[in-house]
Image 1 (tube, rainbow, N blue to C red):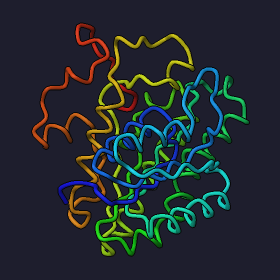
Image 2 (image 1 turned 60 degrees about the horizontal axis):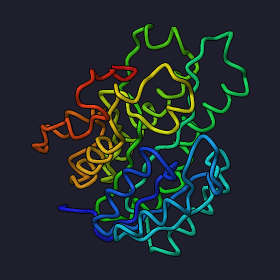
Image 3 (image 1 turned 90 degrees about the horizontal axis):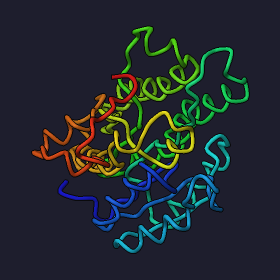
Image 4 (image 1 turned 120 degrees about the vertical axis):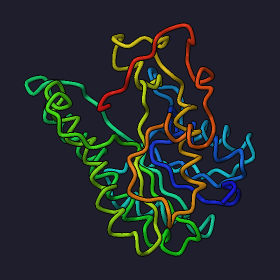
Length: 272
């Protein structure tokens, strides 16, 4: 598949950041984007809503369906999928981008936050994938893509934020299991993770430990996701992709374009 023209993409958490960047990349091809996110009104620290995202997508030539969805609620997800199919006739691609984060140690992790990370990251990924699956099974080149890291049981990735690691890895385990389950049915299920820290409004909101100058922009993840999603689903499943490696395979080696400040050193992301 050479591009995503006419494809319908259901993206959780696409009102800003990496999700929106992926949506805009696909929109430039003329894709239909279902923006499934909670943000119907702007947050003081997190600019962007499902409606502002829809305007950006449509300005690039895509079709947008902004839907206020809390992916913790399976009934809301089911209704959103129904609306997507009513509007666009099916779903070709499911992207599990929505995520909750708390880089906190055990005594510093309230159970409310622990539960949130479970409900959004692991459970939310399962719920959205499950709801989209009946329609993906009818699609010509179906993909599920989770924004989650390679699985690595080294304790260093757990010791400083056990709860977050458990539930971010939960997204990766969804990929691992579903890719094996759905391989014979031709549904590609993969995970994508950045080599370096990506600077987003959500990252800025959690504190000043990371400076924008040491990060890349969400565009590198969007360009990598695009390269995965145009591949033949039958020959591309069960992979823990890293953004730099995906781009290198596609012949894209000039990565300075993605740096917030090309003159500054980049911070490696978690889990790598």
